[in-house]
Image 1 (cartoon, rainbow, N blue to C red):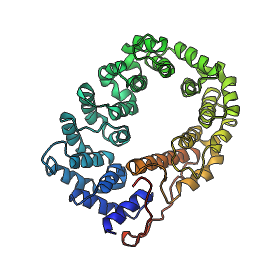
Image 2 (image 1 turned 60 degrees about the vertical axis):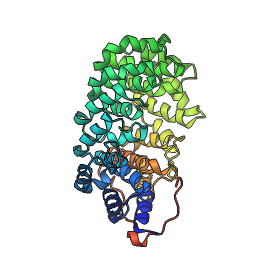
Image 3 (image 1 turned 180 degrees about the vertical axis):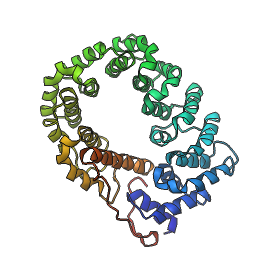
Image 4 (image 1 turned 90 degrees about the vertical axis):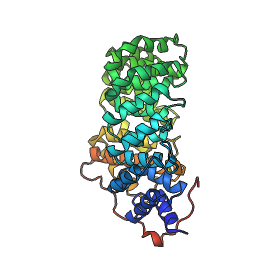
Amino acid sequence: MRRLDLAVEAVYRYRRPDPACWDAVVEAVCSRESSYHADRALVQAGRAVARHADRIAASLRQGRGFYGTAVDRDVEVLALALAGTGDPRGVPALQRLGEHGGFPTQRPWACVLAESPAAGLLPIVRAVLRKTRHRPEAGLEVLAGWGPDAAPAVPEVTRFLDTDLAYDALRVLGRIGPAAAGTANRLVDFVTGRAPRAGRHHTRLAAWAHWKVTGDPALALDVCGAAVTSGSGSHALPYLADLGPLAAAQADTVRGLMESSPGAWTRVFAAHAYWRITGEAEPAVPVLLAEADPDWTGLQALPTQEAVRRLGEIGAPAAVAAPLLHRILAAEERLSDPYETTRILIDTSYTRTLTEALKRIAPGTATPGTELVPAVGRVRLRGLRGW
């Protein structure tokens, strides 16, 4: 097996591979002696290749792509890789991609794009939302992550209320907050069902977004409280959690769901909501800890990462979780369930969640193990799912 193949397998499989593995991947992609697998690995690398930012930027400056076009695959790979390191030198290439219809639109790339400075990327995302022929999930996801900083994009986001991406648009407007107050009546239309694109799954989100943009919690409390009380609205629990003590009237109902629901996601959401509403961590921590499975493979149908995130929010009162989270974080291999196109991204997100949780639960103890895999020339790995 070629040295590059071994390096690629190592970075996909291990959380802390020998730095020589990433060196080999970067060199192959920048010298255009790469492969699809190496390209996809570099796009997901993020801060792991930050020390190679100059090399990636220089390669990106060399031209408009291997075939002489602004939307060449090489341009997309290098621009995304540089964006993932947080380096602003990737922004001009992303702008060219946006102008020529090659801007990344798939949702997984949102977390990569979001590492770029918002000031540089926001005009590009707005332009893409105005003219894209594709479903711009990545752009909307990035805006949702930026929250109030995405306020200038309210006009572009609002137009998606009339499309099948209305759910994403509602979430972005809620995250933006008061700067989107001009959309309040549109949000009410989604709650009442008058909006052409209104559906059952929009109601609670729209009510929450209405609270965030207007500051008036009445509609959100009414809609989300009624959903939880009816026994059919577990998806309203995250919004009640955000409302916090304002939702005190629902505390007993939420606790009942936390203790008796047969659904793991409902129990986790309820435990978090109960803590946010009452401030009582003692009943919530065991429920969340029960879902922090050390053998989780990354299967998105299970709420493992969500449980870890909420334990981290609770902080010191969740100290009993610290040993388990340390053990999970120190694991040598990445999550095995995701396909290679998202494996590094999903595992990096999980390790970041674990690290941030430990910083809040047990400050100063979140440093993962320092063990590295063997040097690339000696690595012998089995095939990975999804190859």
